[in-house]
Image (cartoon, rainbow, N blue to C red; front, side, top):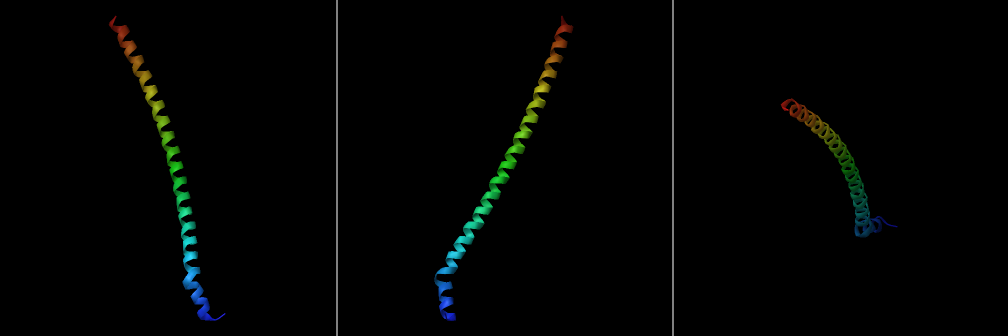
Length: 75
């Protein structure tokens, strides 16, 4: 096989095919990382929302107790 034939194969077919395969692998890896990041952020947001809901519930209960005490003092 001569050098011209090798260069011709690389230029005509192999390089574009290899480049497309490489780009597909790269895109797949980036997409997988993006999905993992979104899952982690979603879980973190869920945890924050649950803790905020719990805190608001406790605050609501405390406020209700204060209102009940004030209502008893007024009577």
